[in-house]
Image (tube, rainbow, N blue to C red; front, side):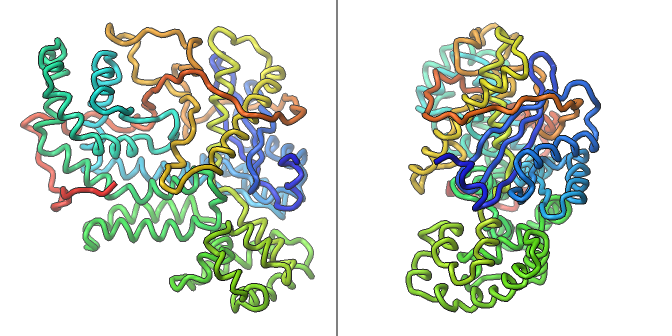
Length: 541
């Protein structure tokens, strides 16, 4: 049974994002997601027009029409001004769907903003110097692998918040890095006598600010990375968990900083700004209310915005007024655990079933509310599947094979990427609780790595020898400004089976660091000391 069969039962999310290929064509991907998985729909060549809100609206509207308006619950894109305006125009025309910004993109913007704080900037700059140096020198990289038995970072599999995931990895490997730069192999090598090698060694061994600032940065961002793992990992639909997860993240940050408001206030203000003005939507509140894990928790919030979100979604997503009123009345039975909701099985399996499966099993006595809950709780919060799709395009459309038409490329990518999506779903199902869902992918990064082209010691590799393409000047998700056109071809049949990639070239994603300038500390003795309020104790990772 294909995923499309489930669309009429669960409703779908349309996911969209743009990118630019090696021929500088502006392309826009469209994917369809529901609680059963994600399907790549098509790619549009958008190279001939200015990328404004009206044209984006027209493209999104055409895709909604193609999929079926009655099936679409939300359209999810990044939160740039043109997409936001197009989303509002789409909601004005299509009265029974929502436009929502990508939660992973908003979380990434939070982390970038937090990264501008002096304490974080100090850690990020110096961590970049260390990782840059190691990955730009093949001998040093080989030596590091001997001491660590793992990669310093895995950006090809993480996509968002690479910088802070790198900080965590560097902290976990602190002893190995210290052992490396004090080893006989290092001290007898030419790298130990060069200026940049000495600077990296000094950061690792003697910089009194680096490790305390790194620990502080981890303590204040790890709860947000956990939320990112929830929305971007894809293990189960995240809509029902996002509202509560953001509250828990703020409380955890405050606890990590000792509970003193003066210590966490600045970070809370950054989080609240992005949440209130960019990220939060009625769907998040409604899904929180309908999630049995949250609703039946002693800590369930009774904030008025939660019921406001519920009522708004009931009115918008249930066109039939009689059905909407029935669903509204049935909320009382759900809240009071009447009928099936009060059965011992229903209580015992709240944490053993996903919210969608729980409602499917125990919501039969409230059919109108059940249908509504399954639609809302099965929604994704992230359009990051579109970014994973860039990697599939890059394998089809390489620097050596760059004359494919958009139509033919669409057909090839349709097969390749849907095979990868199926393989990813199988991996997620088999994932253990202690495994990181952000790190299950082995898809290559679309951004140029830190294997420096001008470094005489850098490995000179042909990109076609690997299951990866390395591009120069690839725009990031937050800065897409390319023109739009609507010429495309709808791909045909869905493909089955799993695919095995060739060897992957592990690259460092510089886009996550691009807003960090180099005016901060460099590990020199004359760096101004930073007060970290005694947050230099050990971090449990």
